[in-house]
Amino acid sequence: MSKSVKIGSSQVTSTPLGLGTNKVGGHNLFDGLKDEDGKQVVKAALDDGIGLLDTAFMYGLGRSEEIIGDVIKGYDRSKFVIASKAAQDPDNNLQPNNDPQFLKRSVDASLKRLGTDYIDIFYIHFPDSNTPKAEAVNALAEEKKAGKIKAIGVSNFSLDQIKEANADDQVDIVEDNYSLVHRNAERELFPYLREHDISFVPYFPLASGLLTGKYTETDQNKFSRFSTEQYSAIMKAQTEVKQIADSHNATIAQIILAWYIADPDISVVIPGARVADQVHSNAKAMGIELSGYEFDKINDLYDLF
Ligand SMILES: NC(=O)c1ccc[n+]([C@@H]2O[C@H](COP(=O)([O-])OP(=O)(O)OC[C@H]3O[C@@H](n4cnc5c(N)ncnc54)[C@H](OP(=O)(O)O)[C@@H]3O)[C@@H](O)[C@H]2O)c1
Image (cartoon, rainbow, N blue to C red; front, side, top):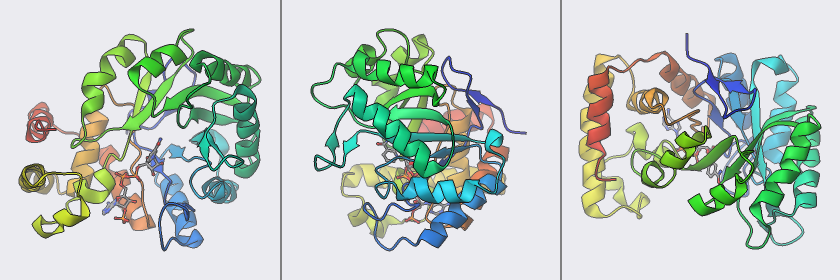
């Protein structure tokens, strides 16, 4: 059975694999999404024992939370964790707003859309330019005291902003861009997070699908942020990860997800999904144990990043 992960110094625990839901109702971010597919994605996660749903106001401007709220009516609320986020201000062109009163109103609005009386993890989605970070976090600490949320997170904060936010040791969790092909957080954030018992959740863990193995040499134009040299290294690594995957009777995506699960610096990995079959497949990563040799080998394959 999969390990249980504790979130910072909070009482919240989760499975090591969660579900990213920016393609559940996230019509403002992605084309061609259907609400019904989104519902099936959330159902698939809960049916497969995935214990964390990562959502945000920004995913469909509330629609993702509403879809999740609809689906979870049929499930035992004590069996899974919901993480949501706010900062984008609908009354100011979605500019980041960390004002304490705005954050408190956002918690209430998320609770309503989700149809639940508590949110396990609530993140400040993006920093704004003027609110002192400790004041923003204090607002969430008050929501925690009131029982509306159970753990406090920040997302897309620089190390200095995290330090400021965590002045009173109240930050439980940080979510930031991280994957085997985007490893800056290892150098920039992990030492501080480790030292302060703050959990880390990587977003874009599959590099938006690139690390699933479904792309080939001819798809480089879809991933313009990588140089030709970097893209070739990713394709070469993919061939080697495929060999490890074959020996586990697994897919490349499952092996990559199992690698994050094995990494002690990573708390919960939250791959997103467009359709339920992707969720069913990704959930199986929780049953894969990599050997130390395989873990190190995969680590080295992506050492360019
Ligand atoms: N805090 C933040 O600012 C922030 C920012 C971004 C994301 N997030 C969160 O992080 C989560 C993860 O990021 P992400 O979803 O953008 O990227 P991701 O997890 O790197 O990639 C997910 C995408 O890969 C494809 N995919 C997933 N499983 C697959 C499989 N088994 N086989 C083939 N393709 C598969 C799907 O897209 P296609 O089918 O369309 O290829 C899916 O939507 C999000 O859902 C969201 O909850 C947070």
